[in-house]
Amino acid sequence: MLLFQTRTDGTRMTTGSVAIGIIGAGIMGERMLNAILQQDPARVRACGLWDPAPAALQRLQKSFPQVRQTSDAAGLISASDCVYIASPPASHLAHARAALTAGRTVFCEKPLSIDVEDARAFVAEAGDRGAVNFPFASSLAVAAIRNWMGAGDVGTPRRVAIDVGFAAWPRPWQADAADWLDRPMQGGFTREVVSHFLFLARRLIGPLSGLKGHVVFPEDGRSERRIEATLQAGDLPVTLAGAVGETSKDDHNVWMLEGDRGAVRLRDWSIAERRQPDGTWQPAPDALPNEQARPLALKRQLEGVVNLTRSQPHHLATLREALDVQEVVEALLRSGRA
Image (cartoon, rainbow, N blue to C red; front, side):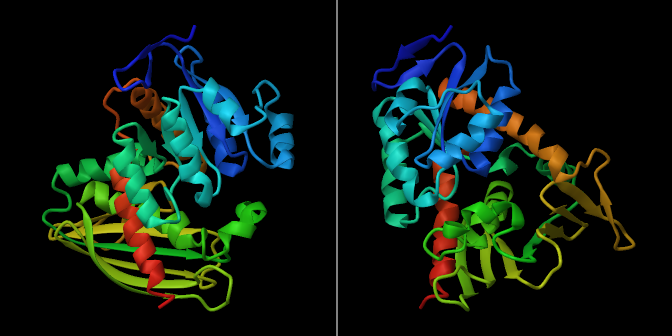
């Protein structure tokens, strides 16, 4: 049974099963819905789904007939304790503000907004009533890297390097969302992918600053195809490179931390590796491919959502962390339009 108390600020604090409503019936909404349905319903449950596109709702109705679909966003928010927002970025803050006004907490996809000023205002308004879905906050591979750092395998950190590449953009599994994912206003691989690795640098190393970069937009009306940048994470230099069409892999990515005693890296989203004395890379003993690692990370993300909704400490990416990443991403993208 759903139980809740009212805080002094008028928001709800759930003490029973946390009801999560999902706005957005695309790939991310489907993944989160599937993850929720695999959890203990006494702790967390899916209370509804809404998307403005009837075809998107019909698609998910076939796979999840047991999940209620609401007729509008307001009805979805009313039924929820926490609202997960997985719609295109331009719509994020309107839904998030509506949820907060109704006394609900918010778990949002990145970026918070396409407007940095509006994102700053929202973070100031929201306080601690929201978080952002950066799954590296719950990654077992990231936990392995953190443990190696703590054990001294890296020694004194010296630099971070981030490299991403794609055979094509959007990636094949994103083709249905190409109308915004391949447009400069909301899409591009810097917002969608690089932001995760910038979050990782911020979370493990320190605040981001000192950006100098260049971005290439070769085709009018389409998203970027190449980026190069340098910045700082805490006191460490960070190099960043990314490109479309220069690899045969659908999705190539490496985040590496190098120190005076060794180096560690995260490869292909979920493989934690240490560099050996002979220069080869050895995966963590329990390393899993992303297809197997993602459900485990989502489960841990949902544990964080439960704690967020109950006003308990959580490990999720905070709104402030997400804003800091967005500031860097948008500044970098502006460098290609100057």
